[in-house]
Length: 215
Image 1 (cartoon, helix red, strand yellow):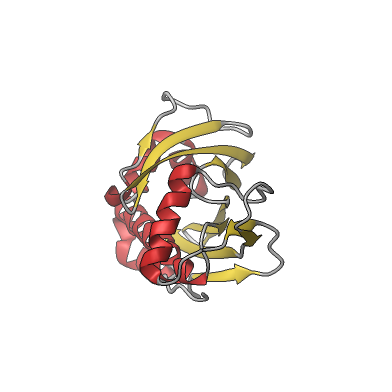
Image 2 (tube, one colour):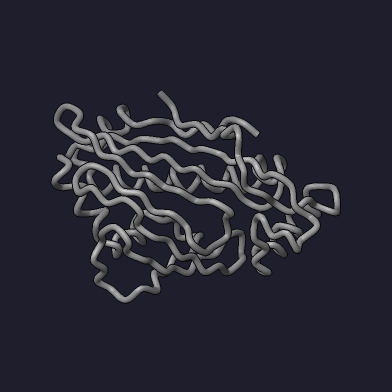
């Protein structure tokens, strides 16, 4: 079993069409769109067309029970522990935060050097089983992250499923956004194994290897 990043068919989101060609021009355009906050479906913007949704699925097995690992995720302060340092993650919402359905979380991050404010909402909260956070404001057109926790032998299988779409086209995803998302989740897996690594080698053997596919 391995992680995958693949396009989701039937996406109804929209994205600007790049007026310039080439990877460098697309990267400049992506930076401009993130900074100016172009939104999908903006009828006043002539540079729009359907955007493709992508899905990343990855899992990590940890040698602890759900009753141990879920409270770790329920503490928003722990997000910084499993986020790569190059993202410069800062949580802006005053801590502690009561995690439940409807909770709003504000962050500041950097994506390829671009400072970005990000707001997400917990839209599903089922303690010890699953929760979902969705972007309300941020760099993506769509970001829906589902976390699930399943008993598996003497430990827990933690699954992540992220559905997202973003400014730019297939090349932007292939060379910029897709690899960045994969790196973030690879770091997350490694840190979780490190934090709960009494059986790190066994955990690594059970966990999926990140191998992005698709455009």
